[in-house]
Image (cartoon, rainbow, N blue to C red):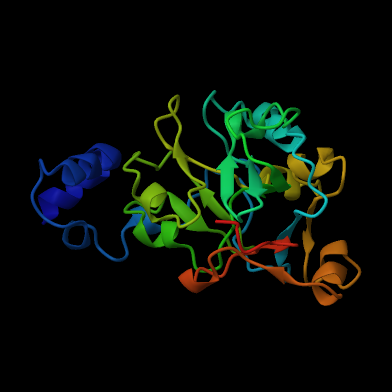
Length: 266
């Protein structure tokens, strides 16, 4: 056991990769002690270096109002520019839902909605009853499945409630990608590590709004502290109207709420 721990300390990432590939026998639960350094809270996330890990009194939530989303794609463009997201991958995207008079639903998201939806679908030759748009992004769950399955502690939930990824620890095993019930994670082809929306944590820590919220022309995206009774999100969630979350039965307790969510949304 001492030799295994010694090897772990020498090259932690390579050791765990070998375990996952099956080239080193044994279970991660057996070879990694419960108090091992690898399970400590990561410190390499941009915007929180040198900060003390203390619980805060803030309760950040995100609200998406699909009744006013026009599918312009500005949010996707802003996110791409903020994070240099590789082509073909999206930290946030916009889906188009088309409903015909027989209640059939057709969902598409070409280029993640990056270029907006300026023209109707050409592959449908049926009369269309309704069209609406649904932005998707990380749900920032209070009980995240992705954190539970990460074998190296690269995916974690910060004391202020953000589910983040430490790319320096991530070994690209994709366990978190498979575990996420909302399919918001992807393996970054450049870094070879897991990637996802972070609600612009580096901006929020500076008192700024997430980039996508900043550019939304219709105010479909809202962000703020639910514990602040003068905040817009508090007034929306405590006011009239129905707000709900996706996949409530999964038990992840997401902090992303949708206003005007329809039963057709998956």
